[in-house]
Length: 406
Image 1: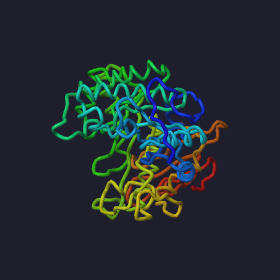
Image 2 (image 1 turned 60 degrees about the vertical axis):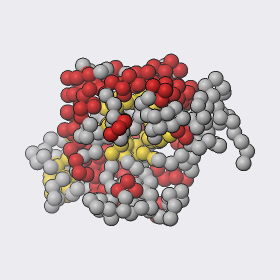
Image 3 (image 1 turned 120 degrees about the vertical axis):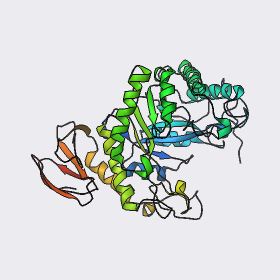
Image 4 (image 1 turned 30 degrees about the vertical axis):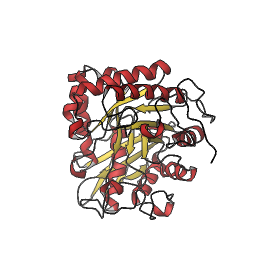
């Protein structure tokens, strides 16, 4: 195998060409920008990325594994020949397919800089963040500062100020290299880490990042409609503890499936997945990222059963194919076919709170209604201007003035 030299801060970073595009946060309510997918693979094949794209997801969240990019202090290899060649995925998804991508600084436990949160480790992380920004400057990458940083082992617990101070240093280093960079922080569940969120807001996190990232998993795999109250509460916290309200992003949420204990049936995962995106589009959330695309072959492990794809081989390295897709994949695909090119307009007021009637509008003014109910037995409702609709827990899509749902 041909050796590829590791890159350092001062060198020309790699030979591959990424198309230069400006980076912006997705616009809230815009279907083609907000609806996203989380992947865990690197060096991802174009065939797999095409499956993601054809499923209806246009915003990608991908792992940036620090320990595997920097295996030797001060040397960073993002490209082919490295242990984590994320360049390939970025080039294909953003450079060739033209979609937005957000890289998570993740798997940031003990590495060549020592124990997590030690002073040397923090210094190393700031340098790594700067190196990453230099490598991807002008390439349309959004950065997410650490993944669920509150989930450390008991012996590694730290005061809230440690994360905020590190976020401040890392954001400063990134923006010194790339003033136009977009940075997302927080990356926790408001349900399981409310005290961290409030403390971070008090300490100034909202002044550091461009958006607050949440992992808003509902309680015990509850319904996605629970997120409406959750977002309202977090925005209230921002105003009360941070003195300002900044964009919210849902960067990870999903529902794992049977046969593991408490796993949802495939059809429920499909219902919840599309409703999750529709709720986020209606609530002004700047990113609605679903967890996750791949399902690895371990039917007893919940972490292996979140995906849009069924286990299909004895190894996790085997590429998924359309025949492996769960109903959740096709449910999002159907939603995308109905709402592509449209943005959220308004919710139709109804007397029955279990019913959701969301109107989306295209640039030509044509509207599509996404409609469902959370009522257990379904409902038939008459909606002025839209006709008589048979509502179930799976959304239907109706083009005005047609009364036929898709």
